[in-house]
Image (tube, rainbow, N blue to C red; front, side, top):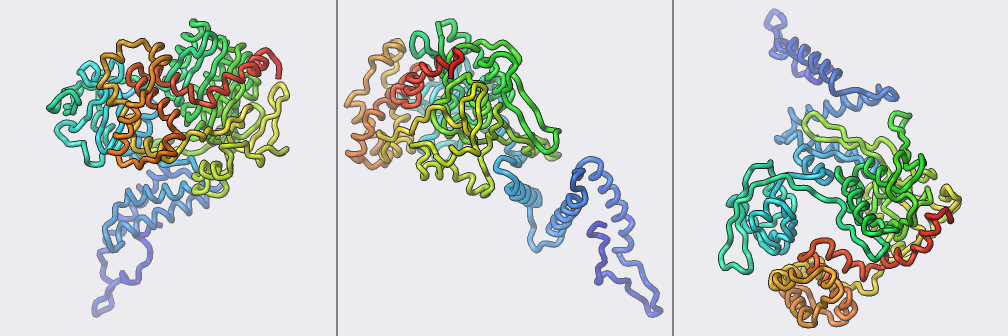
Length: 561
């Protein structure tokens, strides 16, 4: 029975002097209410509300309770409320009682959430960053409409279609909303350029912009290749295959696959990538859910391009989900050596469910397990808030600097196909642990990063020296370009202008790393990622450890343990 037909003592029939009951407005409308309730009930039963087979009565009672409460608020609450926002909030709070990865995405936010995993988007084609409330162009994307229009690295975008976007708290989402749009539409930009006294105006026609998830691939030396994968999006596997094939043609005999900081994405791209390294029909991953509806098993099924060569996978605490599927499969099948630190531990599978208002529910339906039976998911019984603090707790417990001994117990012990011992407990445990290198880290360096001083200085230096830098071959730049003392003094002036407090002791501690990073960001401005990562790797302890471990990886590839 709906709330409209419940007994209300204030609506008792009135009587005349002869005590004859008269029809009240409520009684007149009652047949309409009943008919409406029946129609709505039929529609709800047919299209929306479908209780589970395991607990139908309890689910139905809870559904009716929520419906009643929302109806009373909408009709009788003292103030006017936005029931849609109230519902969104209620759903979000309800899902917090489930697990940390089940989520509700309102319709207004769905396009942004999906764009992260899309293989391309439509827009003007720039990589940007926000410094001091101003949009700086890091680089126009190669072949994109901004490059064709003449946008340059270092340009400051101050207005979009006549609307000021400088100094007003613009966010990344705000930039996306203004610069992205359907292919063929135009957008007018006003930009400031260091070499021009007046603002420059550009009218750019939006186009389809390809995005990349394989950030870089290059030959480290004559026989060692390196591939960095930043996420598992809709084009990831194709990008990976192209990179792998190109490195093989250059003589690659062994590979460093860098999945550090990779938060995951599409599972099928992860399994296909793992299949490139695993021979035969060995298992890659399996899922286990409620009953058997969402249970699955994935096996190697194609002849891969790198099944017999040494592989090292770099992992850290930022590697999650699909990254962990790849690493777990290669480790359990004795196909790769894992170097770094314990991965994030995101082993819950979400199914996207579109809702009738354009919003989306991403519901956890199963768990990921590695071939040896390890659950990838770390515990979350202490609640969402405690779960979100896991990275901080790892730091405070010292896990970034030495392996957590509590995870190396018999109850968490598993074995690979060749009998190597591996451990569960959430996340993928590395074969070779590498502590975070903090010897050159300081608060001063942290301030330079947080206020974008290094990147801002590198952009300015590139713009001032563009002609000379672009004449230099990348190999020569990497080997011989030095960040001079004068450049460091200029950097410190930019830091002072950004209100970074100078500390002599901390500067000396971080100086070598700082010079390396300045050079890397200049290299990125000139050559893109191929000029960025090789320079960073000179000071990258995990990368250097991977190079030292290839002897062990070679034995593993040849069938040893």
